[in-house]
Each structure stands twice: as structure tokens, then as C-alpha cells.
Image (cartoon, rainbow, N blue to C red; front, side, top):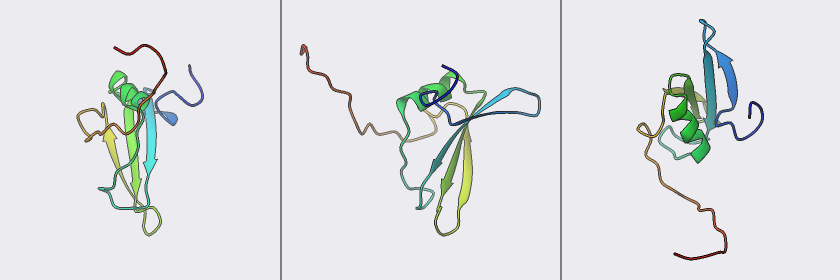
Length: 93
């Protein structure tokens, strides 16, 4: 897949040396410390393409937007809490 939802990033850009820059953008109206949602696919993409992945985090969006950037694999940079499960009826273990 090279276009559309499900890639694990929002924007494909380029560094000055023409290398890929994969950008995911997350925004909240609240403080820098406020929680935000990230998909397993976005986490996997950040690790698979850690040399090219950038998470741009916009916060305090309504009152005075500010920004920070996390580069590389996100698994070790964020506190992660599962909040949903995929379920199907079928055999139980």
C-alpha cells in the first residue's frame, strides 16, 4: 500500500538529502502531558522505519498551539496503554 489510510503515517515528505520523512500528526486541545491515541499500525511503522519516522505532537491547540517532535520508534518513547480489543466469535482457548 502506498496511499491512503493504514500506512502508519499521515504525510510523506523528504529530508534535504532526498531521504523519506514519514510524518504522523497528533493534536489535542489540552496540555503537553494529555493523552492521545495512536494505532498499532502507527507504532509498527515508527519502528519499521525508525530512521525516517517523525511524530509531530500539537498541543494546547485552542488557546496557543505548541509543537514538539518525537523521532524514530515510538515504543520506547511513550507510555502505552491498550484501550480496545478486536473481537470475533469463535473457538475459545
